Length: 258
Image (cartoon, rainbow, N blue to C red; front, side, top):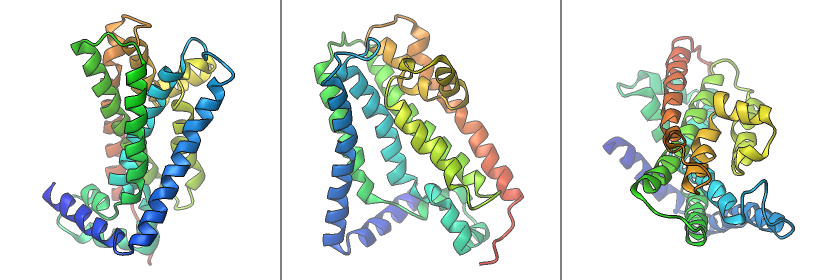
């Protein structure tokens, strides 16, 4: 952890070296994020609910998914840009160092500009919670914490799986976008509003539904099923195949010769 924090500190100092550029990029991220937010507001300007989900229930779903994604964009940026490490030959150097390779990949990059999205997701989360009539209990608090933590875990796992794809080909941007961006934009809405096939896919194959749909049903009082509250815990199991695939890929890795 000490090594990781030191690496973050160095990347942050580097990012703010050119402050005008940093501030401009930071503000641009704010504009981009709120464009997603205003799309939802515009949608509810025409409809009172979407299959029983109100504006602030959808915003809660939206905030949870963007919380995890923006967190990983900031603190796991090295994994997100893993293809660049291989293309530039930097991954070869990481393999020679006596530190955990995945930790070194995490330390290789840090993007403080994306903190704008992380902060905004927290703002939207607070706005949603203040406008929802939630009967707060210990289980409801735990449910919300599970949702936020599992959101980080699911995106971290997908980042790692996307990195594993780079061991096969470094031209896998479309696959990564399908898993990451496509799934993220779908999961920012309660997946129950989509057709059954999509619900099954995003519950079993890529378990976004366990992050912010089933626990959302429990949190908002639409269901009393305690398993829905515990659903985010099962997302942690997704880490097992992702880490296993990464270690497996390293064993079969061949240098690009850069």
